[in-house]
Image (cartoon, rainbow, N blue to C red; front, side):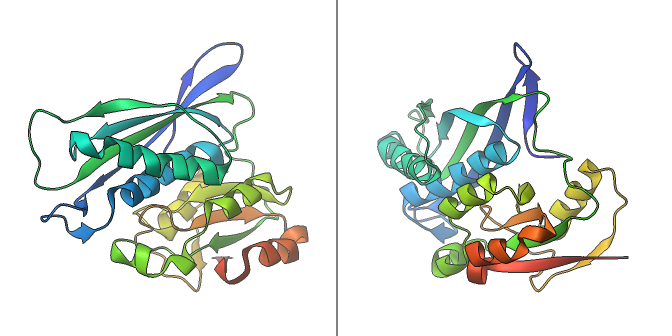
Length: 238
């Protein structure tokens, strides 16, 4: 359902694990998309951490798998630390690098590990009267860097997490807005319905450049002020 694995831990707590990967994006000649490796790591860990935090978990550590080259490790960590700063957290980083064989394209994986109370997961808590919106535009590939003004900032994501008017947040991934919409409905025990939104419903959301939210209608004006030009309403259709 959600892209987070939950494992029993202790004292009513569960381990929460979220991951993301990136391939053919980086600074190697054969890469499909050219980008600094620290930026690649930033957007990859952004996805994993947003997934983790959106279900109510507290992030504890990041695991990095570097398949680019051993000498890129520090640059990759720099991108991860940037995302952590923007989220207001400080996490230890561990992992490994491919140092035996050269690769012709960039590739990396990141895993975020956290803890969440088994009874307080932020899943399936959207009431029938809720309204819905997408914050940010779904972007992928070169568009992520070329149109950064449409990327939902992590600082805004933190504000939305703390908002008393927001019920659930779902980062929009490569399967698009409509897929995340159906996941949200399923988690809340509702039948699938069609929906309408000014944004393309089936376009890839890339590295979670946008977030689907359910919210209390009483807070709509405040949420719109917070999100400004990044607010796109999503309407359920009967």
